[in-house]
Length: 108
Length: 121
Image 1 (cartoon, helix red, strand yellow):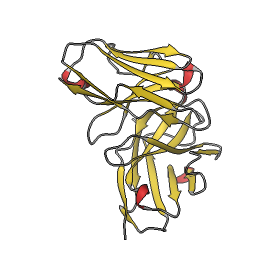
Image 2 (cartoon, one colour):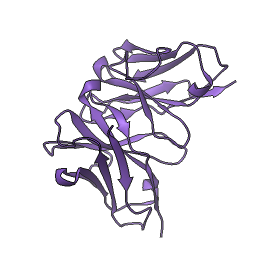
Image 3 (tube, chains in turn purple, brown):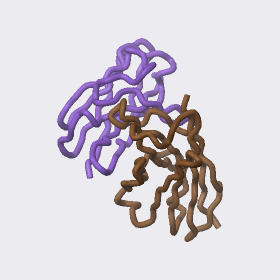
């Protein structure tokens, strides 16, 4: 089973700043199967990016994903007030999917 | 636009079986383009993938839950279902159903709103 470790656990930033969230896997896997989700309180997660670097339909271009091998990154170029939420990475290439534990992005 | 809606009992007694249904509206559940997936989230914690079912009926389950989980689908009713046996308090969570879409390399692009299940006597 591939384990995903996200860092930091909590990230405190101000609107307008740049956010960099990390996701590290316990073993190499295809970047085609790495996704990022955003979850706000009381809501279901929302797909942001898939295949490590492709944005889902309707996702603003301030969200970008990158990485390969075991190291992946979600970058939010200029934080908007609505971006403060919890972010999860997920791998779904193997027959057993896994999520990272999440990074909480909070307003500083 | 496809929508998913979970339904089922909000309270289940320990040792009993949790049963939930996800109703898919606005789209086909029989398309080979999708997986149909269950995820759960204990209060204040992260997401846990439970399992998925494909149109063919083939399934994959989280190894930690595999002995207790069954996912099935009823294409005539555009529904898929989750059964989790021998539940304990640790199974208390918000349960989500979701769609894995081949357009997104099977990432989950549509989610239900979630339903809270509490395991308690």
